[in-house]
Length: 199
Image 1 (cartoon, rainbow, N blue to C red):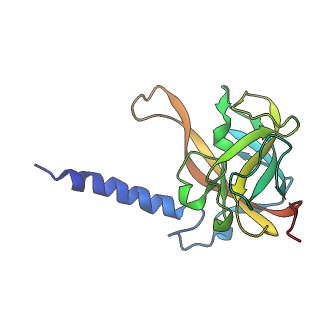
Image 2: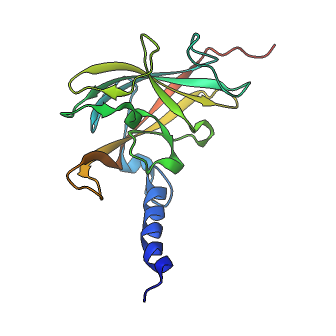
């Protein structure tokens, strides 16, 4: 009888090796040699979206809608134009940025500065400050991707853009989901600082 730990060990090891290679980690080829670095405001297709990453701003709060949970922290706001290129509506969580350590998740955006890693992020309509949960096909949305961070406000925010693939899920191959993130491009945004500095 085979050892269950041995059966599970190989896939977990493969997963860990694969995860650590996305946007850094074990791949010895520099990131700049693997993917294109695009300018802010450039349209990029990373399935299932066409994205234009426009601007990053650090703020203390967004009106009466959002404020940091931890006193002294700030909010990072990334303004993005996104068009769902698919044939069905998709969850906005695909655009919720994750850290490099979590880049195995089925997301299109990875924060490449570990000091700014989002633990939770929310996608808002940039014009109304209303949270967006679903993005319909063929429509372009002006979005604000928001997360809390601590420490000083950075001058720049580096982001990795990952493309996803529409595949059947393991349990039910007929149910298709966007998954398997793969490096596609990077973009570095200057960060506008509108936070109040202590006197």
